[in-house]
Length: 240
Image: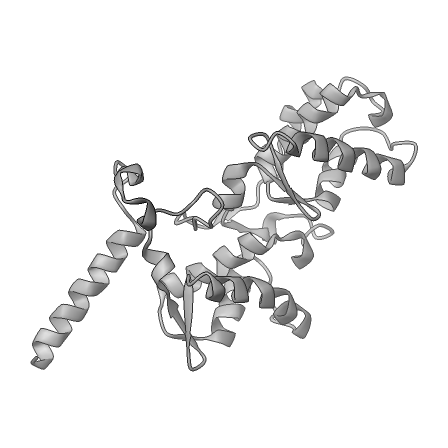
């Protein structure tokens, strides 16, 4: 092949890959063979623009919180509150969820007892997998596990803007987006840029350790490929 032909083929291949990552919204993936479709448990990266972290609206919580003491809420009322918060902010860490509740009502008589009750209600809600799913300290609706929000944590309050409050799948997506927009990048640059975009400005040794599992998951699932210290999109990135 001539240089011009090679360049033309590379350009065509790049265009094809771009279309695979950004398909027509009207396309129906259900028509694809099962071997070409991602399962409901797989990561479906978001291609939406980065958006500010949006906490649950006070107006959405106040009508649900008729009692001024969390201990007075019935299980049904508390479940409605929890689902409203998770729907707005999932995947959400238990510490953030508790902070949202305590900002709206007077202090529970025992924070430890409140946390225990929240865990119990979240566990009950998760038994119906269509309502909510739990993973460690995190809660999310099933679609939020598949496609986490791509959000800028700078708009989160300073007390709650902590890397441990960001779920692994949200971090996987942040790293994948960097590689999706510019292939063959050094690993450190991907880690640094992925963190910086979502509002964490320093790639400290602790942050590097926190990103180790999300990066490993992207490599193990073939979303990314490591080529001698540089990252590029893997075959899973082109499956619909």
